[in-house]
Amino acid sequence: MTETPNPNIVDTDTLTGEMHPIRRAVLSIGSNLGDRSVNLQGALDALADTPEVWVTGISPIYETSPVDSPEDAEDYLNAVILIDTTLSAPTLLDRALAIESAYGRERGVPNAPRTLDVDLIVVGDRRSDTDELQLPHPRAGERAFVLVPWFDLEPDAEIPGLGPIAELLEKTGRDGVIRRDDIELDGQ
Image (tube, rainbow, N blue to C red; front, top):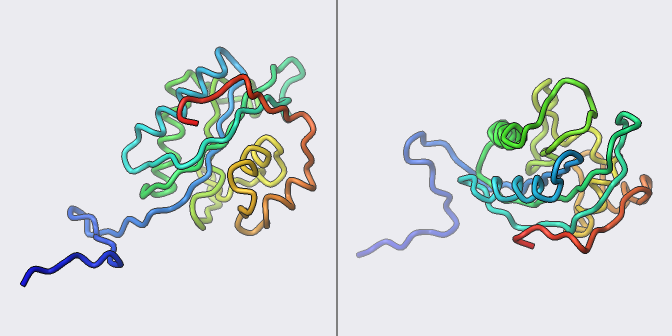
């Protein structure tokens, strides 16, 4: 008699024996240096090409005023990407940092202009409060440039520990966030 696989059982990784559950993750991408739309497309493409990452949603692009940046900082282009992934949160963070680095992101001065910013907002229900990784992102609930595009994709979404993004967006408002329907990311 031939056994049929049970679809309710998650297979373990054959090399390590570890379980790899699929988690929904929300990432915010932004750029205010160089060819901003090319930088955002590069981030999306790099994420889509990452093994064990499946892009499931891409928000419209928004032009946003810089937050807590030097006075001469240019406006950002921002978007939110939804993914399903079996990667751990630290591995996903490493990938985000590698993508930023590939696009010339220089670190050092907080909130300085940047070619590319790839932030993990939430990764499933994971919580972390280390110097390297904070989940959910500690300022996401206060940032319209995250909440507005995320709301476009998942109006009923919540940030663990903070509440529904609709309520958070009501508090922050939409000032300085302008939808750019003239710019699209391939894959939308």
